[in-house]
Image 1 (cartoon, rainbow, N blue to C red):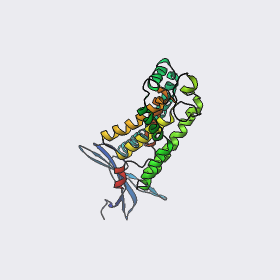
Image 2 (cartoon, rainbow, N blue to C red):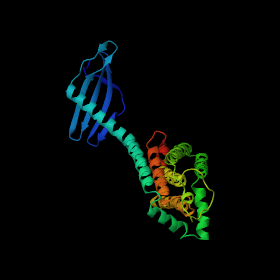
Image 3 (spheres, one colour):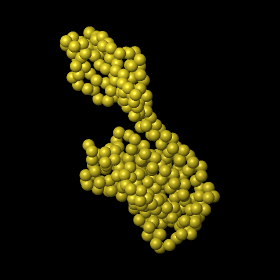
Image 4 (cartoon, one colour):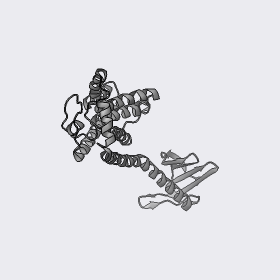
Length: 291
C-alpha cells in the first residue's frame, strides 16, 4: 500500500491575504493512518506542503513529511492576520463612525446659535421668503418625516425587496432613537423660541431642536437607497439634492438653525454607514440576486 494517503474530501478556504499567498486545508485518510491533514501555502514562485498531526480520540497520527513547525507557524500567523483584518474592516468602521457622531454633536453644539448661525438663519428665513418656497417647505416637511420613509421601505418590501425593506426600517428606528437621545441630552431650544422676528411655518414642535430629525431621516434614507441599489452618480446626485432640500426647508420655516440640519445630515449618513457594516444589512441588490 502506498504510504501517501488518498484524498477523500476538501475543507473550504480558511483565509486569503493577497494574490501571492493563499492558505488551503485538505483532509486525507488511509487505512493505516487514523487521520492526517495538510496545510498548503501557495506562493507566486512555488509551493510548499506541510503535513501535521490531528488527534482523533486516543490515537494520534504522525507527521507524514515536510517542514512541520515552520509551515504551521506561517499558516496560523497568516490566518490570525486575516481575521484581524476582517474584524477591523467591519468593526473599525463602526467605531470610527460612532466617534464621528460624537464629534459632530460636540461641534454642532459649540457652533450653534453663533453670530454666523443666526445670520444665516435670518438670511434664509426672511430674506428668501416667497410663495414658491413656502410650497416647497411643506413638501420638504413631508419628505423628511419618519412616516414617508416607512411607507417607501414598506413599498419596496412588498415589491420583492424584503430583506432590504426590513433592514432599512431597523436602521430608521436606530437612527431615530439616537437623534432623540441627543435631543434630550442637549436640550436646545428652537429658533422661534429664542429669537424675535423669526418667521415660522407649520406645526410648532415642542421637542428639543438639536439635531434636526428631518435632516437625519432624509440623509439616512438616501444613503441606504444608494448603498443598496448602487445608483449611477447622477441619480445619487438627485436623491441627495432632495435630502438637501429637506434640510434647507427646516431652516426656511424657522424650526432649525443651520448647525441643527448639518449635524442631522451628517449623523444620518454615519448611521447608514454603521448599519451597512452590521450583519443586519443584506448587501447590495446585485449580491442578493446572486444568492
